[in-house]
Length: 123
Length: 111
Image (cartoon, rainbow over all chains, first blue to last red):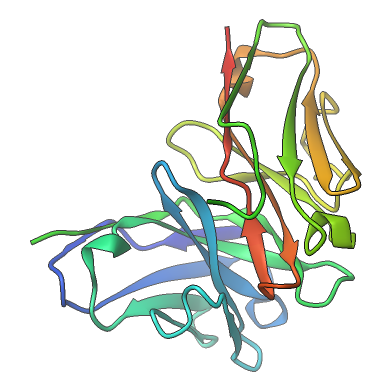
């Protein structure tokens, strides 16, 4: 069974750094993309970016380029989402999910989702 | 303001049929990019409901169906059940933004 398991909820202060994780199982981690989606209550879902663990090819949504860092460790089948300096506006639920390509270049949909990690940033 | 526009809410009685629209533009749905739909039940992660406009993943009941025409797409739910009460999101790709985009989400209430 394909499974994605995320790390637990985080409470941080503005300016602090954070790295959350997503461990994959049940499929070949290096042969599929893995990505991140943000949910801000009342604002809906936002596509953040994806990474191909096989060669670390990473593609960020323009809205999140430079704001976060996506990485993967193929030795432990785990993807990461990282912030160097959190802001209150980063408070959200972050979902790890597996993108599947369509036959349209650059276009993916998410077929498997993890349960999400709630990040709260407050002074 | 989302690139893809969905009604904030729809409702229907058990057994009825409801549709949720997803309106885009010439740089996304109108450019013939596929549309996908997700269901998010309360306090759970989103779940893929429809992919590439009309396809249902294994395990999704055939009460759920998708369609696309011009710059819009629709999700139809027939034989509405109380457990269908959830948020529904459409997703596509926008060539002007070079980015995947979601609709703002629609809250379905089963009366």
